[in-house]
Image (cartoon, rainbow, N blue to C red; front, top):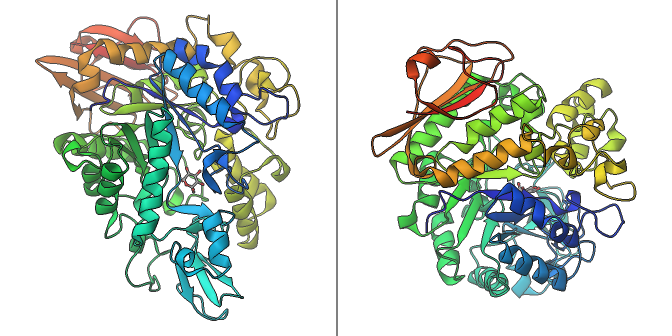
Length: 537
Ligand code: GLC
């Protein structure tokens, strides 16, 4: 099955809508807002996890894959959500965190009791506390191993110490995970997102990494393609919409993950384009985005996947990323529309992250007390330890923290942005009085209505969904520009990433064609600040 004319909307339930006045978003909050999503026109909702969890990593530390965390609601709420969304033609995609479980999960708890069956579910290594098995680093900072004194063993955790990596080499683990997929499928779930799924296959030997943090040993690991094929076939989900989150992956692997002939996944998230503002490749070192590099990456991935029959999930924002409009633009509605244009005409299935369709910006926090995310709090300490001043660390978090994408959805100009009746678990940016759904839904020129049109155009024009793609204006480091083509028809998309006018190799007049959409009135020969336009030739 092909998902080329579909659009997915990502919800981070904790920050979407609080229906019961406890300051935390919940499942009923999503149900309340289905009309809004129907109006926007999306086909699927991917919700990040709401399963039972101690919430050390906001639900990515799952303690029970088949039960709903009471903080989010009940199984009845989830069933109602699936049914009500379905009635509107919107399918639910659930987020499967299968690389690791919470250490609160029954499997890990039984492993801690020394039960061999469950010790084999995880990656335990015998040892002494003075000798860590390898020098690998956790993605959230610090070592990737934790010692359990009473077992005299270390366990691997690529993420938080409370997120223990599962041992996929063990067929019993794989069997458990397939059953979980079947369970949710039988509840009417239409698809799945698989968390960091290219990290599931660990190496045979665990050895020190003298060149990095260990990732080269387990990223796109030796059995990952086999494991995925087995999970999809035996979990009974072939043909459903599936997307894998691929950490530090390669184009070749992503082609295999997503080419329909391989029967692995329907599409992949890769993240190289979201590292073009990492100074020296370091997330916690700031530099302005390198638009020339961004353009090359898009060209490589878009054309490379196209040539080999792979399929991208195309996106700017998610719950792990700062807001694109603050990062690649100036925070204005104009820049928000330009960024939407750049992604929505690409070859791939677009994902919209809650609030992106309103032009929501970074949080603008000025003190560490405002942050909640485990990664941000860990790295704040690490940055101070490494000699950064408090001001520098706060400036870096303000640009890079995952909390920038986790602030409450801005529903209205009312107190707490209409998200909740009480102070939310994390505070909204001050700009919610201007940027909010209530102000935008009926305003024809709003970012919301621009996104609505972008979705409509993908459904209306086959060339947007299925056309080939080729990048143009290769030497212009100010614009992202590409051409789609199908059956002799052409569509040209031009996006200016600069706050000033930019001239093109071929002027807009020379190109001619019919304007499908754009974020300015009329057309000039050049692109105005953050202007985007799509022309059908
Ligand atoms: C993914 C999730 C992120 C989480 C991590 C560990 O990257 O998107 O939020 O912290 O995996 O599960």
